[in-house]
Length: 346
Image 1 (cartoon, rainbow, N blue to C red):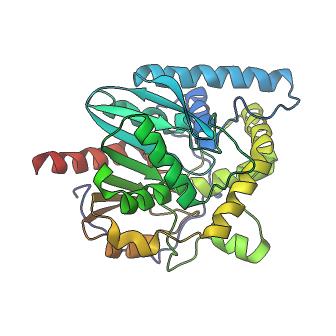
Image 2 (cartoon, rainbow, N blue to C red):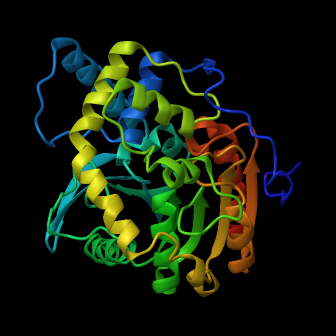
């Protein structure tokens, strides 16, 4: 089956619980896997200070070295620029048409990890930390709702001198990317949305049901137990992580907790599903990629997105949770490359 073949079955599937098994992923080292998770979950480097033990410090140093390796392999360098009241920190490298990657909630620029490498030889990659996350500015008085973040992102791309670009967004980053494409259609050459938020799904996700029932926000964590719960929600098959690294991530999650909670409240106050009415305004060719077993944003969201964006293609990735570019990297790279080839053929 072609990776661009539309797949609409399975919206009401009996989803396996990702908490049922922790199976190792082949050909990926433990440190490499954990290193990529640093970026995926936001390590709060340069953020609030906390008391940590020697083991935690050593874990941080090991994982930081892994991140530097991924940057080197993708030919990326860290840069920063002041835009209005926020300092943006981002990775940049490569030559060719620009490709802008917009991370999800609680995710850093390095969270894209090895997914960037196949595209770094043919495109100019720009990979920022969104304001409020990672090493970019955290301004307590600012609002981090989606319309505000879209305006900041537009000011950033103007400052970075990106006249037009291919845009890739995951989760909250997909929400922001879709909103941006509807607001500034002339800037976006193509759009790739992965498990994007911003649309009310026909079937509520596990995360939404948990929040409605208990007020629990699975994306926020302070303890190893809460970190494990997040892993179970992000992945169809959560990667095995040694206890010292779990403690490292839990410590970082505790550091980030207050500000991340503030960002979620900003999002909730302004609107969690603002993308829904803006979908028809998206004119860019769009690839929609979704993990079939996503527990954060239910796969039934695809129905509205595909109906709303007239020029869209859908890839549903089997046995995959909320982060297909990470959990099913080969399949996601293959689908995105095929999509880019169709653009070049036009």
